[in-house]
Each structure stands twice: as structure tokens, then as C-alpha cells.
Image 1 (spheres, rainbow, N blue to C red):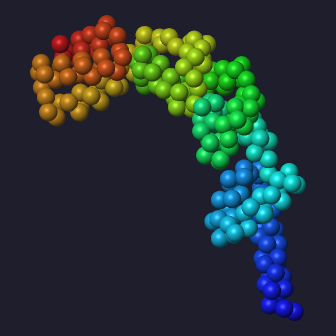
Image 2 (cartoon, rainbow, N blue to C red; image 1 turned 135 degrees about the vertical axis):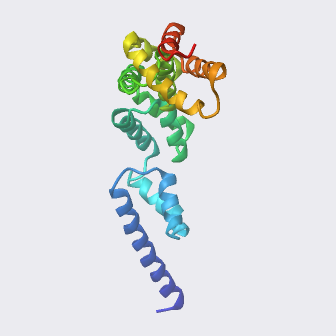
Image 3 (cartoon, rainbow, N blue to C red; image 1 turned 120 degrees about the horizontal axis):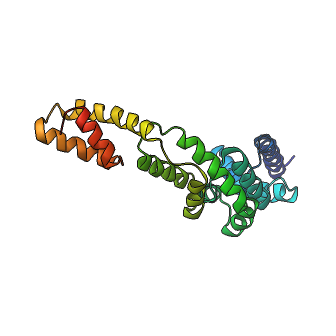
Length: 221
């Protein structure tokens, strides 16, 4: 066996081991081309990347469009992320803009709105400690952070009941007001304490009548 042949045999053996390792990586989930290249680089197998990618593509074990479409469907159905977050995730995985736009067709407007309404309703139920105005702001910010558009957010908010019973809102005000009193009374008293407290509650979105009621009951006016 010549030295050249020996090197070729060893190289092919190394490639076969790398190939088996990559197949195992692909067995857990669909992967994008970039993810496979990153995987090979991580394991110092980057010198096999081009050959490996070509072989895997020919076997349809790597298909970035199919990967992107599957990813969009799973994110829409499982995590309920908005399209902007999904788009960003796909870019990080090396998917081209053309494939991303095509894949996002798997997430129609109606499903986006349905998901946004579900998320908004759940988040709203966790805002019992906030004023109505602050609660609306928090839920809107949450949906925007999940990747939904302003149009979807506005429609979702319109679809849920965002009116708070005055007694419920007042109870929330009392809890926040009492905490603020304990904090501010360490540094302020009298008129200045009263003004600081009013300003805090105004900024939290509570209506004037409830703030005045609280101030009267605490004899802080």
C-alpha cells in the first residue's frame, strides 16, 4: 500500500466517521445548512463541510426551505411567537431572505391574531396588581416583544376585555400606594411626601378620583 493510498483510506475513514456523527446530529431535529456547518466546525470537521453538505443535500437531509417552513409552523403552533421573532430566529440559522418570506406564508394573519388574542388574555389575567392603563401598556409591550405587528397587537387588545372594575383597580392602587408610602416616607414627609406619592400613582396610570380617594383615606391630602 502506497503512502498516498494509505492517506486516502484514512481520510475516507475519517469522513465516514464524521458522516455518521452528522447523521446522528440530524436524527434529533431538522437542521439548516448553517447549523450543520457550525456543528462540523465545532467538532473540528470543517474540512469536510462542503463535501458533507453536498451529499446531505443530494439525499434531501438538508433542505433550508423545508426547514424554514417546518420551523415557522412549529413556532406558530407551539411557542406562539410572532412573525418578526420567527424571522429573526431564521436569519440566525442562516436562512435566506427569499426562503424566510416563503416560509412565513405558513403563518397566516388569522392564526397570528388568534395566537395574539390568546397570549393577550393570559397576560391580562396577570395584571391584577396594575392599573387599567398600565395593564394595557404591559400587555401591548409583551405582544410586541413576542414579535407581533402593531396592527395585530391593536386587534388583539380590542378583542379582549380591558376594562377593570373600579374596586379591583382601587385595591391594586392601595397595594402599590402603601408600598410607595413606605419607600418615600424614609426621605420625605408632609406635603412633599403627598406630592411624591400622587406623582407616582399618576405615572402608574391610576385615575384622579381613585388617587384622591386613597389620599383622603390615608389622610395625606
